[in-house]
Image 1 (cartoon, protein in one colour):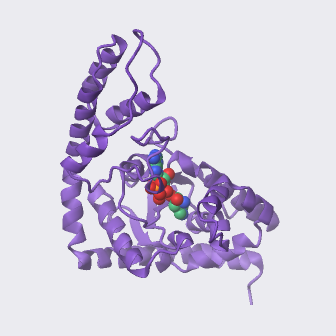
Image 2 (cartoon, rainbow, N blue to C red; image 1 turned 135 degrees about the vertical axis):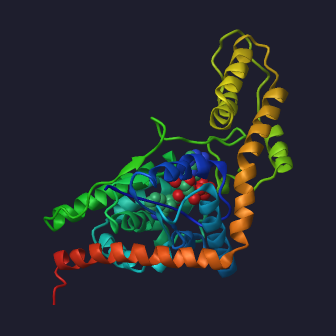
Image 3 (cartoon, rainbow, N blue to C red; image 1 turned 90 degrees about the vertical axis):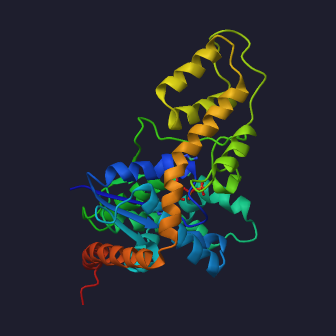
Length: 328
Ligand code: ADP
Ligand code: TRP
């Protein structure tokens, strides 16, 4: 069975971008593949979070994974920092990663720009740690959103390079996986291209009906269609993306027709989107609350996941050490 690996950093609650960009694929894949879904707490250290925030966010993401339907009986769910084997592979991959290529990564450049006072080596080697996460289980499919394309490109490069340097075939070259034909980018409702925590424009799975309504009603629009059947501008396309994600096909068709015959009222469209997001969130929200209050269960799941992940990691690492020449 093919192996799937993916992780999300514990930097707050999961939002609709995380859900539709990544978690929704996890749900499908856990039925068909050997899945490892983890919480990337080491990766979150690039921004120096407070210890109490790490603990809280890690618990939150774990509860949210479960509330979304990731099933510890089907997939291995674990916390990255429980599997120290990853760090050893990270070190080996770093020995074959070049400063120039790491500095050229747009993700690095962007993050360096955002935190000019803390351009640390962890930020620079973010892609080798991510590659280690994936290659430690010899993952071949990685469900991630579009924003992770470059990190995935780097992972393939490091896998290839290791194989070439040591004349081995130990690492497969993993591919990004998306449920849609094209990797999905959930937009922001503020006219920005992407919903993201650092953009401050998220609708969280934990948001209640009123919070969602307020956020959606504030969504940026334009002054309306000027001619029948015209192309939708970006901000309107964004609203339709939400309809596509959370509403029925009929609702989508209804508003699309209203757009095409120029009778659309953005207020109605937004109300509908808010209602449909709220209905989507409601059961997940209830389950998040239940799981969050059961920390014993969360601990148990994390521990059993770590044991399974460590077993797989140890196997890979044993081979890697031999290949490298640590045989004494
Ligand atoms: P954030 O952007 O909120 O910081 P992360 O970078 O931690 O979220 O992303 C976790 C996962 O969710 C990744 O697989 C990422 O590709 C996906 N993701 C995040 N935002 C979006 C989005 N707006 N559209 C699609 N996928 C997304
Ligand atoms: N870089 C991913 C993000 O920012 C998180 C991540 C870390 C990840 N390691 C991974 C995703 C391995 C997939 C596979 O969202």
